[in-house]
Length: 131
View 1 (cartoon, rainbow, N blue to C red):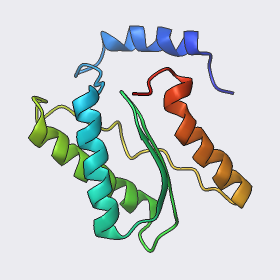
View 2 (view 1 turned 60 degrees about the vertical axis):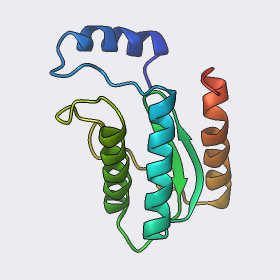
View 3 (view 1 turned 120 degrees about the vertical axis):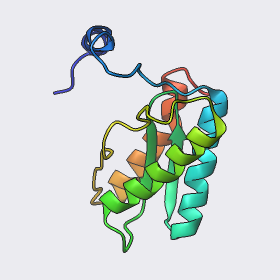
View 4 (view 1 turned 45 degrees about the horizontal axis):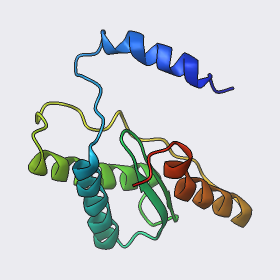
């Protein structure tokens, strides 16, 4: 069961004071840099991406199974976007950009895929962050 938004916000409020680095949220320019880098990595590795949303803190995407393992795909996309973000902004090179190896969910049916694509496409609007 997922915690409530209020509980998550409380957790982050406590965590902020204990973290080695400040929480990283992306501004509009950085979101565009990340999206561009992910797009180039998708082309380079010939991934099939059905949906992508780059937000202030998470990135959501639906990407098709590929000859690369899911973990390798995530690393390729994270590396490309991390490198681009560090080149294009004032971010400290030692500050982690991504919190780990990503979160993957395998979708088994066309209905699952359609539902998840819709979630990714509508999520920025739902949370009030569409621009």
